[in-house]
Amino acid sequence: MNSTEQILNGYIEAAFWSTLDYTSIEDDSENMEHLDARYDFPDLDAETREQMARDCHEFAEEMSDAIETFVDAYGRDYDYVGHDLWLTRERHGAGFWDRGNSYEPGGNEARDALDSYAKNLGEFGDDLNNGLIEYQP
Picture 1 (tube, helix red, strand yellow):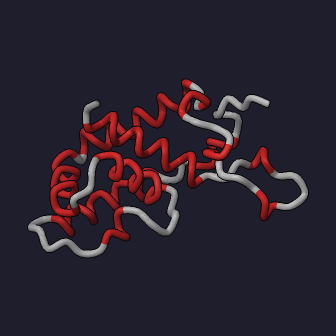
Picture 2 (tube, one colour):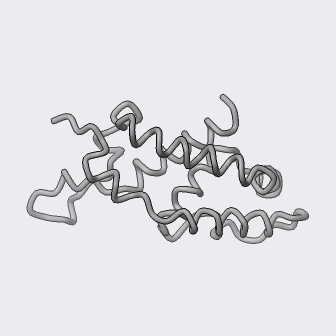
């Protein structure tokens, strides 16, 4: 699996565990589940997966130098880069910016560049609950 595929896997994984499943609401919103409680990668519809793959591919291509520097400076693998891309994009209170300072040359600059890119993508998450997951009763 290449680095872009690893980024995509981490991205989708973070999307599932961090997004609430609005179809699980009954009478009490405190009992809502996250998508990963009922769904997995195969449940993601083709259109949504394609959009996620495009976003991750463009990110990996445009930010390749910053990604490599970040991976080296923070000791993270590419799955975590995808994970942080999703969390930062969705403004979940964690992500690239939450990794602290690196003492490796260029690490903090790479982290900040990845953070800025992710925030500029805008949020994606609500689309996961607008019929883009193939819900199976």
